[in-house]
Length: 300
Ligand code: NAD
Image 1: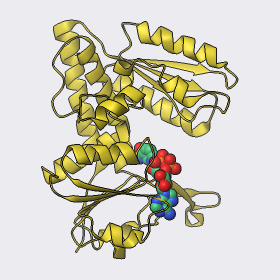
Image 2 (image 1 turned 45 degrees about the horizontal axis):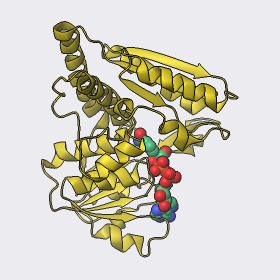
Image 3 (image 1 turned 90 degrees about the vertical axis):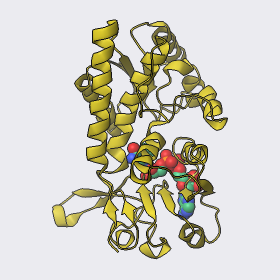
Image 4 (image 1 turned 135 degrees about the vertical axis):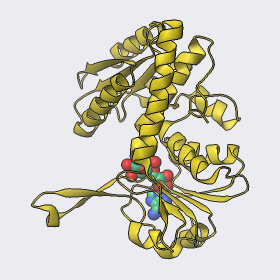
């Protein structure tokens, strides 16, 4: 069997198109422009790349983009004061603090200082609780992107066996919660799981979110299963030239694609969906803040 390739790049472009249409409607019918503020503390190169591309795509869909770049030694009180100011700014509907933060800043404190209604990353403790109890919340972008691809591919995932490998607060746990809310039978596997291969072999849906290059081989995959690869790992690629690298996921693409029914590639799978869902969350937050109907199909 050769798996269907779930093209996250094309899917993300479609989601951004839907967001852009909704933004146009908000501007034309209500004179409202959704606004996203991104806060970056320090000069981590990967974070700078993410922030740049988030800003570019925010503008491309017609929203207002505000970037706050703070010195690496910024005191916690100054960061909290900025968040406070953004919380009360009527032109800002989404606030994202780029993680990881420098060591002297308390990540939980900072995230929980964001107004939950503007918490477009979905990491605020209130949003975690709302998601956990199946209530309307802001949903973390990467798991939301995975869910959208699964729903598009399967229609319904109700009753399917899903295994999530990884239990982080950012990906694994909210992913499991979303699958559960859609009535899948969910197992969360992690670094202490015994017989991971056997656990994965039971799954109709495998979500790999570990951060270990190509750790899931094809012989762990049930024939016809859907494999969603969240991992982003950089490997040396001397064949591309000296010092060059290439991106791989947490699953071994070729051997898994030979057995699976459908699979997301890395790059071009989950990655592009994450930013698309950030934009979707911002437009959703803007609609909620203004008491307007939310865009259909862009929320969990
Ligand atoms: P994390 O390090 O916070 O969590 C990794 C999880 O993997 C842990 O819960 C751990 O228990 C589990 N784990 C570690 N070793 C394991 C093993 N041998 N067997 C089973 N489980 C094991 O990582 P994260 O933030 O959840 O990210 C996971 C991966 O997803 C990383 O590669 C990251 O770069 C990627 N990621 C991608 C996107 C995207 O937009 N595509 C977004 C976020 C994270």
